[in-house]
Amino acid sequence: MSFGQGDGYSPQILILLVVVAVFAGILFGLWLFGAMT
Amino acid sequence: MATIAGVNQWGSGSRYGPIDVALYLLGVAGLAASLTILFLGMRAVMDVGGFCAEGGPYEIQTHCPEGTVILMPLSIFAGLGAAALMGWKGAQLGSPFGALVALAWPALFISLGWNFLEYAIWPPPPDTGIVWGWLIPGVIFEIMGIVPLLGLLPSQRWQGPSAADSPADLKSARKRLLNDLVSSAHERGWGAQDDLVSRLERLATLREQGAITDEEFEAAKRAVIGGSGQ
Image (tube, rainbow over all chains, first blue to last red; front, side):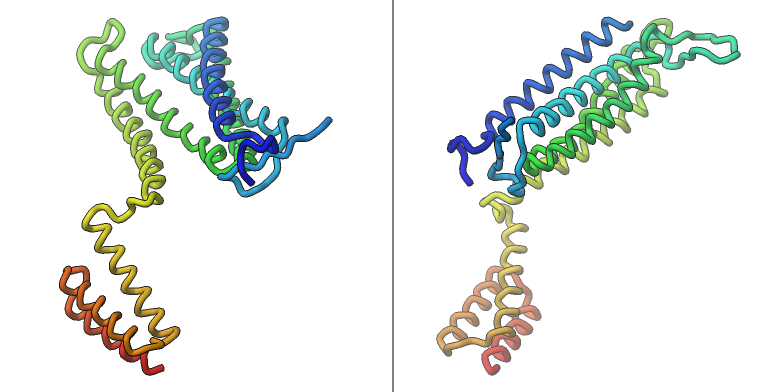
């Protein structure tokens, strides 16, 4: 099965989402640590 | 609710939906958050000397920085849970996404090792000079983080088309070719006399190039000639 046929998630989108999730997680960690200490 | 079937080129072909993707990303974000909190918590504890205590019936010499008593154990268990979630859902998304969880190990040891090294070289007052008690775990942590990371990276390169670039690789590739040649000679026998001659010529070329020794050449030649008689 190939990409770009609207039948799944392209790896580019998934990789982008992973990068966004990593940054979001780091920001959340910084915020939580700052809020609780 | 409609479920989108996602199948990518790297995966095993298992189907996954938007909820699987969301849970995977939750695992990624949770792991990143846990590592961040652990990193910051460690620095906060090292700021008060590296040891602290709370609770219990004892007189406490150094209290822990506010919040770290809850945050540090929480970050460890939340991090383990997030890593499990990431590995589980990542396996459904495809092998690179599942394998990505392995990067948590280098991330953990390189970042915490950095704390040890930084506080060993620039210790907070009243310490001055290099603190060996922090330098040694720092070096050990960095080795524990960097070595597996280096182990992860070349394994991707070895699968590439330029596999036999170095002379050593070329030599081992030739030996594999030779082994294949000999085993196929045993299995099938050689169909034509011309074929046998060309195989022998290739063996001689391999010997001239130094890829095989004289003994290996003789053994392979016997095997090829023996295989032709089957």
